[in-house]
Every structure is written in C-alpha cells, then in structure tokens.
Length: 100
Length: 227
Image (cartoon, rainbow over all chains, first blue to last red; front, side):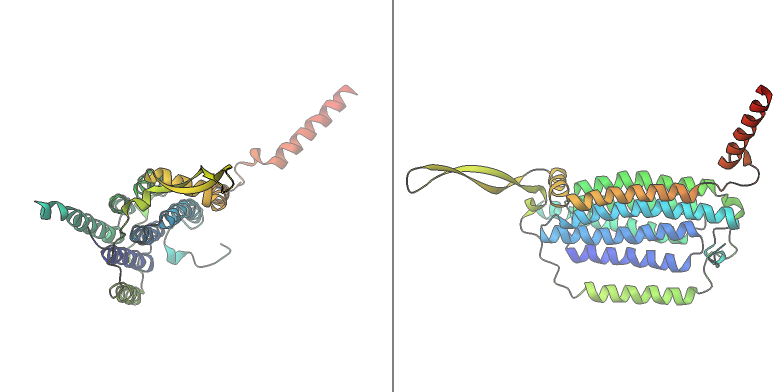
C-alpha cells in the first residue's frame, strides 16, 4: 500500500502543474480547467489524510469542495461566454478594463 | 506469492499516478481546448481511482458523476459555443512565462520541502473507521434498589462508506449541507443571469415596456371606436 506521503507528493505535483497552467496559459477556458486541476489536487490531500487518520471529516470536506467547484465552473463559464460576446476573444490579456 | 499480492496496490498507484501527472501536463500543453478538456477528463478518472484506493468509495463515485459527468460536459459545451476556429493564438503562452515558470518551480520546491520530512508513514490501524457510524441504542440497567432503568448509549456500527458519509452529512453536518444547496441555487441563478443575451435594438418586440405601451395604445383605439 502506498504511504500517505506518496499521495501527498502526487498531489503536490498535480497542484504545481495546475498553478503553472493558470499562470502561463492565455486561453481562459484552459485557465479554468487548470483551476479545477488544482482543486482536485487538494481533494487528494484531504482524502489521503482522512485515510491516515481514520476519520470521515476529510471526505466530507471533499464533497463540499466538489460542490463549490461545480458552482464556480458554471459562473466562470457564463462570464467567459459574456466576455466572448463583448470582445470576440477569450484571451485573458484582452480583458483589461472593468466596465467593458 | 504474498509479496506479489501485497505489492499490487503500489503498482496500481504508480501506474495511475503516472497517467494522472502526464495527462495533467498535457492539459496545460495542448493548444486546442477540446484536447485539453479530454485530457482533463482522463486526469479526473485517475483521481477517482486514487480515491477508491484510499477507502473513499463514495467520493470516488461523486468524482466520476460530478466532475467527469457534469463539469466536463459544461466545459465542452462552452468550447462548442465559442468558435474555436478563429481563436488560435499565435502565442499560447503569456509573455511573462519565465516568471510564471519560476513561481511554479518555487511552489513545487516549497510543497516538497513541506511534505518530504513529515511523519506521514504510519497508516491508520483501524481500516473500518472510514465505514462505521454511531447509532443510538438503549439497554437495561438494574439499579441498586432493584428497579430496571433503560439507558441510552451510542455504539459504533460498521456500515458501508456511503452510509457512513450519509449519516455524517445529514446529522453532524446538516447546516453546511443546507448552505451548500443554497450556494448551488445562487450559482445557478447567477450563471443564468450573467450568461443570458442582452436585449439589443433588434429584438425590441420582447421588451416589456414596448409590450405595455402597445397594449395601452390598442386600449385607447378601442375606446375611441366604441365612443
């Protein structure tokens, strides 16, 4: 059975890949996908600690994080669609002024 | 033989973890958002396998249902709404990519330095803890004066992982659970409100004020005719 620190290392790698994607990519949809990737890495951490401690709290937290991720994806994609109607572009560098 | 069977979980972890990391790197590296979304789907499925390995069967099922089923469909739907054809950036990377890569490397080193020396190696010695819940029960107690009294007590009972999570969600975490449902309602209303098309000059027939004015106008004409 892999130890808890193996899971933590894997989660750290996934989180870093997601973070680099958020910083480097300019396509807004890809940026949102990378945010989902980072949330998944955090979920791996929580479930690993839940397994290590023998307590259900980590899994409950994971379920709430999945709920928040679903809401965040819905609102974020709606904002992307509206921005695309306004600017005809989903490049993050094109969204530079606040009032359109 | 025993050594072989005991090393199977480690082998599964190495294979699934490698696939997860490789596909997550491809999510970042792919130019076409549809390809990114499909590799993200692969990553989510690998993470679900890891959840099941850690004794979180219900969370693994929710991961497949909500992430792989719901959120990915939402992403693909939006990618299709937006015309990808006229989007290809000549440069997919931000101009600040050296700084970004440095920040990413620094965060990775920080996380590894945090994780590596930690004492996380002891495993949970009670594997049933993740699938047990407490139930209320009563038992008879004989008092010193001869009467019998029924006393309440709680005891641990081993059920499934899903049932244990259900008991915890609906009993210990009831208020956060209801707040989460309210959050989903607010997110849904917000997404509809933000995503709906603005009323332009082309479709003034559906403008409410226009309809009200039109009704008042026809009423005036009718009264003039009857007078």
